[in-house]
Image 1 (spheres, rainbow, N blue to C red):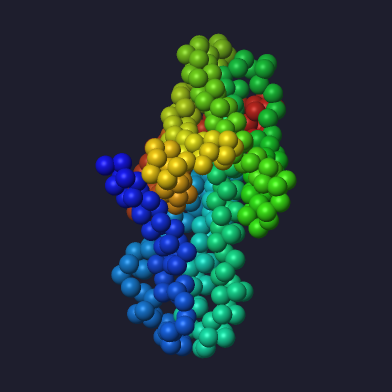
Image 2: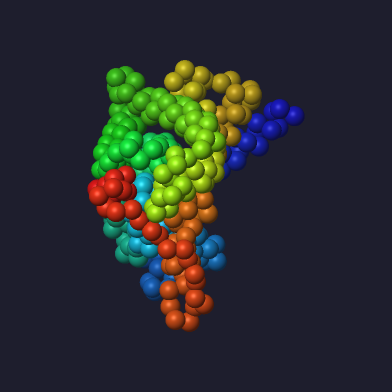
Amino acid sequence: MNTSTSEIISTTLMSIIEYAEEDLFDEVTTKKSSSRTFPTCSELLCDVYFTPRKIISIAIMLGRLTIALLIILLGTKMEKDFMRSISNAIFIPIIFTELYTVYIEVAFYRLLFAENKKDYDAFMVNYITWTDQFMTFLNDYVHINIMCLLPLILYCGRIATLPADRINAFPTNTICLIMQIIPFFVSILNYINTVSSAVVLALLATLSQILTIICFSIIFIQIFWSMFIMMRDLPYEAATSTDMQIRDARSRLAWSLAYMVIPFLTLIPFVIEAIFVIFKIVPAKNGGLYKLRVIMEILIIMIHFYRPTWMVLITMIFLPPYRRAVPLLFCCCSCCPKVDVEPLPRKAPDTSLMYKYADI
């Protein structure tokens, strides 16, 4: 029974890996060209390329890009808010990754029109061969960026529950921009480690796994700390504040906790993988640890692929300013029914320090 289960899991993972290596986007262009006739396609709407499965694949790819852009569009329908600043910092790298996916698809399509093997090989080397490594870099960047920014949402949410004299200027955009150094640096180390066998670089590359465990621990602690803060009464001045972000601080913190559930759970496979890497655990084939690691690797692949979809959904459902902005974005023409949305009262710019500097 154990052997059978292990074989099934191993076969599943190998199928995914082989699928990615041979045909990253379900495309004949990545297969060896020894028996290929050139050009494979001579018409723009080539039936070799536009198969039913390929059309579905393209639709999913464009759908992921569209829903990621949706969050940026929703941000134009709201005023200064730390949730908008942090969400933009999360989704801009996601959008860039999805645009890069579109580039790879277009490159593979263009490859079908190569006139001969020389042109085919030259195009592969110049435009396609290196794309797998850069995609790994982007996936690492997006993953580490989200890990680093998630605790900031809860931290800012807790600041809003403090008395007015303790809410100081908080330049959220500047902080989010500075924090981009962390995922960039760690992702670069991971990439260098893949092209070099130096022991020092291998040790530095474990920073990614160490950072994963640290961020997971910080988020875990922040969740329970925020739950404790949420059960306390707000300061008296908050109840009478004209700024709903202060007045509804406890409610917004509760929604932020709900928002954190799925991202927090998706970190578990990365944490388990990090433990294997840091402690150099090499499980015996067909053993329990071996099956666990294979399952975690499959889950990590799935998390990277579906991240734009579930991140957009939880952002629109659980973050109050985005939830309010949805009807404003989709019901903006005369033919749509009138949508009554509570206005966004603001405190005077000179007193609303936390939100005055939210977009700096």
